[in-house]
Image 1 (cartoon, rainbow, N blue to C red):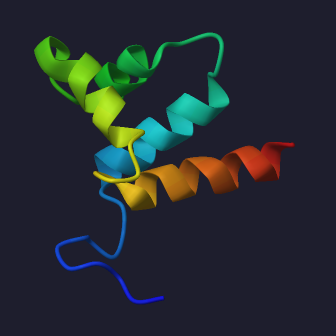
Image 2 (tube, rainbow, N blue to C red):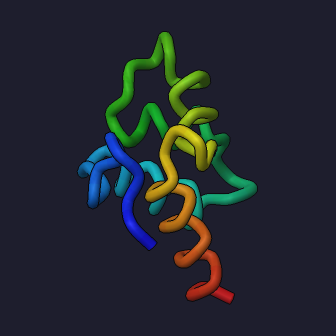
Length: 73
């Protein structure tokens, strides 16, 4: 499978931190709280958190979240 044009080949530090927080704190922190803790701006964290979970916008983040969940199960 070839990467889509414009899609980065790896996660940024913020994306990685968001994904880790999101998986490790499911049920204890909202996605918005995870985005803020990862360093995203508070005033747009709810939108950022939503987009980070959308495979059309951030397929690598969604893939990483899925693989981390599988590891923890």
